[in-house]
Length: 482
Image 1 (cartoon, rainbow, N blue to C red):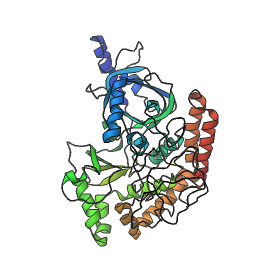
Image 2: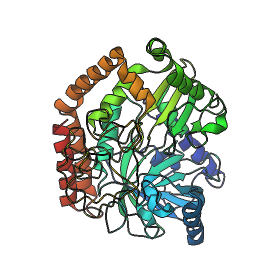
Image 3: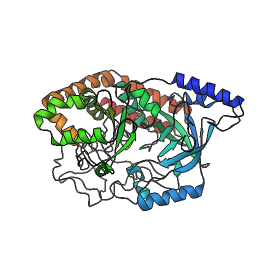
Image 4: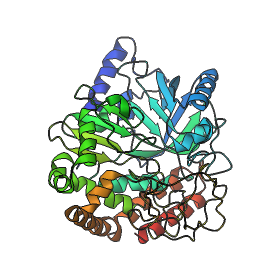
């Protein structure tokens, strides 16, 4: 479980430092913008979801073009120098790079996920364009070239890849994960502008590699690992180099290296059933993991640790020696492609296995994708050829539908966990408990209504009220069907 806290003390300290520095001739943490707002005064409310925030990104166009060319040729996401203005406070010497995998595949030359799953240009879902950087996913790092530069204690800001016009599905899912006690991410809606472009509505969230996020969610020191979409959870031996394309360590490098994770993978891969059942609670927070699996089912997110994106961070607690799975990348929650019934949505390729939903107009499935034998896609969906599911894929992932484990991926930890009667019973218990506490109780509906009202009251310049209502209604239908 998490230790979510606020940052008032940090903000107050930064405000005092900024004031002292200003008296000495300037504040190196924020450039002069002609406003009285200090870094801490504005940044303390960075993830206040009751208001629409404003973020402007500017950079040398030549740097951007080189970055795009490098991504297309090598798949590498390079940093560029940028200036960032957040709610009127400007930061020079910041950095930014593109962030994502399937949502950038259209820029990097395709492959599985080619064309992207993020919201692109005018063609809608499934298209991404380098000509519209304001619609691409970004990671902004304020201290990239200036040590200590932050906004209210935050160094990293993620501009998410929307799967819909509003990103309501991800925003609601993130709040529900936090309500369930999981290590989620704070989020807020923003008007996002790049190099003078028109503003577009985006969702910004915390980045787990940020120290502020780690301190707020975990009381003890530890290490943070990112599961890469190109990898799996198999044990590959003791050589850390064997995991370069599989896991990336993004935090706690002064605490430990990849050793705890490698040892855990070996345990999952090599332990016999009796040992696995007996020793797993010593190595994994099983309560949190059962909650994680239940919430992925309830928010209808098929793109979890046994989904196509292998999306998760993994936290290792140095005090307990336990791992905790941190949910990440929820833009495919509640029907995924935005309007109730996309991949994983009610009536779509979702937990009920339905096939009645039509994809959003303009949807182009990943190049090379092929559904398992015997599966009939919804009418109107054109599926390209060439993608082969694994030989052991039986078409019945967790939940009985096209959810976790779909698109040819299965996770050994999930499989072994649910194969132990005690752990399966805990998962079922969490599923019932959280369904009652968060969905049947009306908590999910209240969260959705709050997010939707902010958009309809404050963001009509970047999204039509009718669009907000349509997408909110679709998510409400998904909530009701949970």
